[in-house]
Length: 161
Image (cartoon, rainbow, N blue to C red; front, top):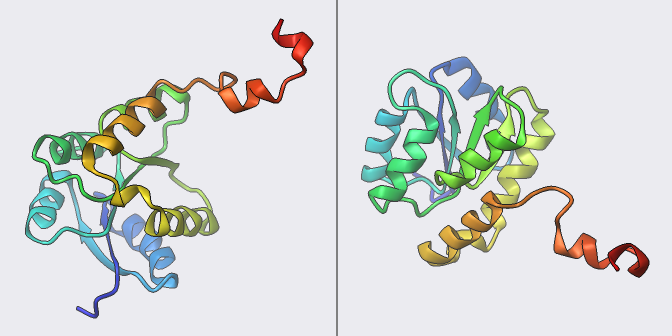
């Protein structure tokens, strides 16, 4: 170990995990791998990574079940990004409600993966107490596009009356 921050990639397709790991390596991050949520959970309990990037649908324990288990076992001390080929607000909200912190569509550009990893590695949220992070995630799960209070404040007054 070099003391570098670590990313655990969880995916039943090793080639996919290794492709995303190239984005992490470009940031100087160490990478680890697990082929399902159960194997990932054992690794996390033994040596927690700084961030987890997990496929949503896998045989055995899914990424969503991994997120739930981490919360339930009080091992959720790091950001977890779920990857899925499914699109839509319901998918995003479900992931956030079950303990994920972020969501990426499979097949996004390396630049997007790098940007999300950089954000989470530098973000202050991982330093928050678990209960504060849980409240923030719960608030995000209820977010509806178009109902952003900041956007509402920027609307012309006559539209709000």
